[in-house]
Image: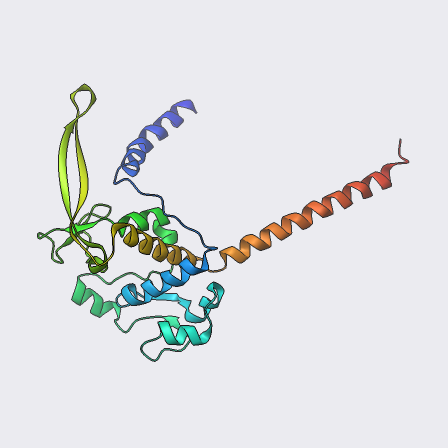
Length: 243
């Protein structure tokens, strides 16, 4: 049994070591209770992401959960004759997307659940200019990514600085640093805040009922706690004459 366990661990260790490698991920400031952030995030999503990426599992009228009325949705988020009850789809199909871009852009309905909020927050802030790539862009978190930097006018253009350092015991380490070469229309702090709003919305879109589910869970736990007290006293009443 012990030999089998040791053998299993020896097989898993390389995979675990490989999974631990990669770029450092910054913590995303997610707050699904902040409806103002979610409203700003969906505006960024519709204007910059929904051109190529769909969200076929999300309906516009689900935005009622973040405080938007039908009139606000129509006025600010619907630009091509869509209806409030429709899903967030795009005109480009997968076949055309693959032909034009090399790969069909993925649906973003549950991208936050698949990748994680920290990964998305870091990824959207880690693009840099790379003339060797077909799009002219590359990414520290997702090397050789096929997606261009859709938000580059807001962030500006970053360049990658690679430096080798000698660590302990003479080991060589490579450090990657992103430097803002050409500023965009937003300051770095403003761009980080915009990405945080966008990722906050992507997290919401992955499970729009999460806040209601959590609130319902608290109510259920409180009910069970109260019911436990009633049950305890009832048990004492039934068994008080039993010796």
